[in-house]
Amino acid sequence: MPRIAGQSGGDGVQAVLLALRILEAMAAQRGPVGITELATALGTTKSRIHRHLQTLLHQSYVARDGDTERYVIGPALVALSYQAAESVDLGSAARQAMVELRDALGHSTVVSRVEVAGLRVLSTVPGRAGIEISVKPGSLLSYRSSAQGKVALAFGPDSLRILAEKAKSEPLTPFTITDRTEWAAEIERVRTIGWAAAANEWVVGVNALAAPIFGPGGALAGTIGIVDWVRALPDPPAEQTVQQVVAAAHRISAALGHVAGAAPAHPRFDTAGALRAAPRQPEVA
Amino acid sequence: MPRIAGQSGGDGVQAVLLALRILEAMAAQRGPVGITELATALGTTKSRIHRHLQTLLHQSYVARDGDTERYVIGPALVALSYQAAESVDLGSAARQAMVELRDALGHSTVVSRVEVAGLRVLSTVPGRAGIEISVKPGSLLSYRSSAQGKVALAFGPDSLRILAEKAKSEPLTPFTITDRTEWAAEIERVRTIGWAAAANEWVVGVNALAAPIFGPGGALAGTIGIVDWVRALPDPPAEQTVQQVVAAAHRISAALGHVAGAAPAHPRFDTAGALRAAPRQPEVA
DNA sequence: CCCGCTGTTCTGTTTAGCGAAACGATTGCG
DNA sequence: CGCAATCGTTTCGCTAAACAGAACAGCGGG
Image (cartoon, rainbow over all chains, first blue to last red; front, top):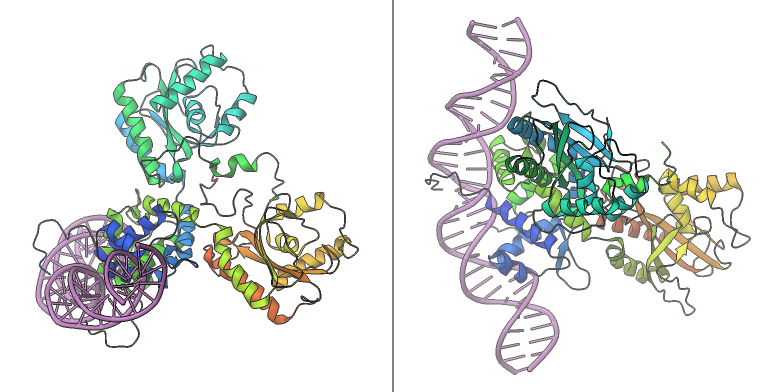
């Protein structure tokens, strides 16, 4: 073929591209789809769609609806998805973005996941300051006195707010917000602006900044945050700094399979079984 | 092209087939994969794999590991999977197999899902007998006095057995098994043969036959069973009958995305919705 | 009955994807 | 220190493979 043009080969193997677009379209549209419907939606011919659907049909990536004779998502795709989801976890997906964030800003970076008792620190990247503030992986951050906690309460499921209300811990510093309505206003503010800060609320002299990470389906998967002395990370933080953290959160969300649009208010998702498994559930080893 | 042969075109669009096999291989193998590794595994050339990986890379269906330069499953596949899993549920996936089973045998057919309190009947297909035994969708079957319950205890997670033991209900009929060791033996027997019967244990004069349905990942998703008078459904049941029920269960499992091999010992229990997109994994340090 | 709508099958044409071999860049071993 | 053996990437002419378009068949409704 005359692959003269500068750019190397358009954008890839066409047949694969079409197959992916077909699967995406079928997944997006719940329920059965017809061939002509797909053909017009994807802007191509019926015969092309038909041939590809036959292929996907043989591989069980699509199936046919019993009653109507239209096409639906097949079991093989579900099986593939299941395995795919297992091979992506927050800790490793965040790693790259964390390092980039640290390199850009110089502060310590922390990624944590939402659990019942608080926010579990999954992994950290140490900052470049002389006197280091370190948070150990595996430790818990409280909901009431950390930027991560605010983010979790603002973007997590409703059940989280109820849990956090019951377990009202002692304020760690005089700066921890204790007033009920003031706290509610703060959470609401965090939800609006999309990030949270917590100067002096955990330890006096230390500031933190956090943003939410969403998983596929738009559920809160965890938080990413930076921690440093208030001298290095002032309150309020620089606009630039906030943007960097939020951008890192977005990148990680994307890596987890979160699609940009459509962030539901409060999805049914319940944080990876952590919440669910807790109440009773004997759970023998 | 000279598509002379009778059968229509081998097995489909080759490029798509390869792309799917690549994704499957990458999903199966946890962690990063190299090009040559994939090439030898799939029995093709490096350049072919490379070209396809480039395509999948542009579409974010695969990504590159930060540290090593190998390839891993990408976010787009995770997102796709998530949507795919949502569009398949036990109730609708089972419908077709249920009707086929009823047409083949004539008995009432019931599909149920495992819940904490018992087995929730999701949908039923009435039999063809004159005097009908009907089970209402939405009702609960107990663990101790139904064929479905035996199946759930035999193939479900350990926690289920503990739960069932605590909630020891009153025997519904004189035929309900009450002896502890006898019951344990019965459960073990069910696990071995792969199906369960329960003559006169729920109502005297009624027999039931059930088999397990597995979801993707090998977790118990629910049960399918047939119910009829002992006169129509004798005890022990005919070999033929058993085969049909088990076969129907297998078909439904496949439709849910269960891959034939690899049935893990005791997968995570999940009360909310048998099918779920498998979020993060614990991994705490 | 005929029209408009499905999904499916059949052509010849071409192009898009292929295999083989060469290319750099690392890594490991003597 | 260089040689060997990988690795991933790139190139290029060839041909099988995918394409567009039109014709076919089954349905349902006006």
